[in-house]
Each structure stands twice: as C-alpha cells, then as structure tokens.
Length: 536
Length: 69
Image (cartoon, rainbow over all chains, first blue to last red; front, side, top):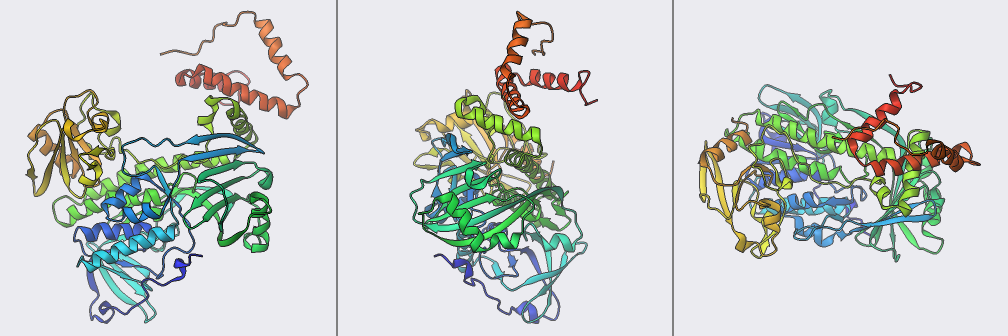
C-alpha cells in the first residue's frame, strides 16, 4: 500500500533567517505547500522571482483527498514543467454511469474532442499530485532557481504594513520574524491567514455528511465513474465509485446530517457499508477514511493589499464537479504573471485587482455549479425531490431528461467575459477563443499549440505575418506565425479562424486570449497590451 | 421572440381535461405528485423556448391562488 503520505519530504531545518539580528525581508512568501502553494512557487521560481514556501507540516497530503484533475489544470502543469508525471501516473477515464434505486438509468461518454494534448480528466491521488509538484520544485532549486521550502514553519501572526507584510513563524526551535514584499496565502479552506487577518468567508453551509473511503482492491470494475442516487445499499442517499492509480478506489457515501462522525469513521462501521455496496465476495483494504461536510463560499475580495489569497483559502465548493484544486491552480495561473509585472515595475499595482476580478468571477461560476449539483444530489424540499426523481425516472427512457441529471458538472476552464483586461474582438472568429478564453489546444507541425504558448505576451498570427519581436513600455511581445501548412488536422482553423482567412491573437502569459483581430495592426496591438496589463 | 400562448389553444378542452384527470385516477397523492413532475418536464422540454418557459413559470406563480406576489 502506498504510504508516501507518511514520509517527511521537507523536515524542519534551522535556517539562517532564524539567527538574523533583523527580520529578513523576502520578495514573495507563500504559505502552504499544498497543490496551490506549490504551483505558485514553481511558477514564480521558473520566472526567477525569489520565493519562500512555509508549511507547518513536512509531508504531502494526508490521504488521497482531491483525485480528479481536469484538462485545463493539466495544461497549466505542462507550463509549470510537470504535466507528464501526472498524466503518466493518472488514470484516464471517459465513461460514466448513473444508477437510480436498483437500475442503471444511463451511461455517458465525455467524448473528448480530438486534437488536444491532454485528456478531459485524470484521476490521481492528491499525494501523488503534491509529490510531483514538490519534485519539480526541487528540480528548479537544483537548477539554481531562487526557491526554498521550509517544513515545520507555522505562521502564527500576519501583520500587513504599508509596503510589506510582517510574519511571526513558529518552529521546533521557537518563533522568528520574517518580512515579505508580497504574501500569497494558500493555506486551505480553514486558512489561518484569513482568520489572523479577521477576514470574512461567507457562504452557504450544506447540512450533510459524506464518508470517503479509499480502498485498495483487485476488482474488475471498469475504469468508469459510477454514481448512484438512492441505491439499495445507501437508502435515500447517494454513492460514488471512482478509480485511482495503484488499484485504489474512491468510494463516497452520503450519510445525512444527524450522525456521529467518530462512530461512522470506525472500520467496524465502514466495512459493512462497503461490503453492502461492493458485494460480499470482494476483498479490499481500507487505505484512508474521512468524513466531510462542505460549504460553498468565498471571500469578498481575494486581494488585501499585499496579502493575496488563492485556492481553498479564498473560495470553497462542494467536491461534486472537481472544482477545488482545479480552480485553485487557475488562481495562481492568473496571479503570478501579474505579480511579476508589478514587482518589475512594468504594471501598476492595480493590475492585481484584476486577479480579484477574474478569479472572483471564476469562483462564482464554480460556486453556482457546485451548489446546483448539491441541490440535485441532496434535494432540500419535498417538491425538489419529486422533480429530481422525475428527472431520473424519465432519463432511463428519454434522452431529453439526461442533461438535467446533475451528479457534478465537471470542471471546465473559466472564460473571463467582461474582464477589464480584455481588448477588442473581431466579428466572425470562433466564439470559443474570444477574448478572456483560455487558449484551446491544437496539433501544429508535429507538436502542440499550447506547448508554444505561455510565460510571456505573444502574438499568435495565422496566415499572416507579425513582427518576431515587439516591445511596448518595457514589455516584450513575441511573434508566433503559423499557417494552414502547420495545421494538418484543420483544428487550428476550426478553433482560431472559423470563416476568416487570417487572424492575429494577443495571448497573455497565462495562455488566455487578451484580444484578437483578422489582420495585424500595430497600433491596436500596443493598445491591447496596455489594456491587458492594466496600463490603459 | 415567441411569447407564452395564453389564448385557448387545445381542441376539445373537455376531452383533454378528462384525460388529465383519468391519468391520475387511482393514484396516491405521492404518485400523482410524481406524475405531475414528470409531465411538467416532458411538456417543458417540448416547448423548449427558454423565454416562453420563464413566462409560463411566472404566469403560474402569479396567477390568482399563487402565493408569490
């Protein structure tokens, strides 16, 4: 059985900062070495921004926790240089089945579109996810990139000052002081940073408990997502079965509100439930058991001066739809390039308020979807249950009812419609790549489009010429010219040209579209760059 | 844009009304409620037009006897 989550990876070591006579000032400190904190640190280090990660622990995630990683975060991981180990280890799945009572009501296939490097989803235990991020961070450190991680470092006070943040950090050797120009809090749903700053975290509590049991078994269940509404083995509740690597299976059983959590977690109570579900003959070992309740909520603002919140620290959703870690990685993807421009003096500090705008928009979308899934899975009134059951009954026979079935609307990337950073759009180009959208992958000349985008502003030109290098107010724009000859499958045309003969896209460092035209216009490009960097 | 048709639109209204009641005959309250829910979903899908459905929901909620002001 995998026990990598019990092995210390970055045990406490005394640092020179603890012996300094004055608190040492760092450019960026990240609190929390979970998926989001590690993602932020890698992004910063790759771009030579010195970063220090503080974590009160020294190991990867306890238990598998987040297991479902969507395509867009995998693309972000490619930009961070660690997509391959995730996808190589992860389980790719496309088929789902929905059961109601004793019957299978229907099955679905995610039918992933052709012409993308990454699959729609992989399942991977959070401990592997964090391990591969951690290994990437160490690799960058070995290459001489300015990144440090300190385990056993618990931040116990956060004091925002005018142009820096003062921290007190507790360690096995006692407390010490640090200062940082910028603080990124990725310390999870229970964020101590948020509490220490007395900030709100308002939302809706769902009165329900779910039992997660990860079991190791050699079972011949297929690699599919199975979801039950009101099954015989868990009456009036839901259940989920999903495969992870190493013959680990995620089982998620809804328990209701009035339960004794400590009792329900005991193996003598968990095992009979699992036997009722899996059948009496299936042999399994329990790897990890947890009971969770959840809320759908977010902070009113994610940026508080020089303290910036990301991931679950900033927003929390139900697990249905895999929108937790997946949206957190999109937070730091959005934040880091902006922070670097501000730190380099190339963009005003107000650019960071667009992190707030864009990711609050993303969080609201996730909270909306997640709340709706939860209301379907756990109807809150008699009439709500009647309609839910009517949908499930009809879905067995009638195709029309299936889109109503909501066992989690799986995470899709957020398009920042209406963002203050968006520049002009051109009529006739495909809707899916409008300003605010993440770039859509496509095979180009033996490689992938997304592998050629990111970390800088770029002009993607299709069937037209743009300068190889352009500079506006100290920010470089690199030209990337492609033509129909680079597009054997026609996917580039479908996704970026539509009916137009040519197109020019201004791409942000996070691979989102800033603006687009059907022909190159230098003045318009310069103006759009200023808009996209908060300088307009 | 299409609007909710609130003029008389069913030929043989008495026949339809009788058929509606007959469909519920012999059902318990819970079974009838479930049937109504299925019926609403089937009809809503047939109409399809989102604006018309919104008008229908509002018309039902605001009709005399409806609780919503």
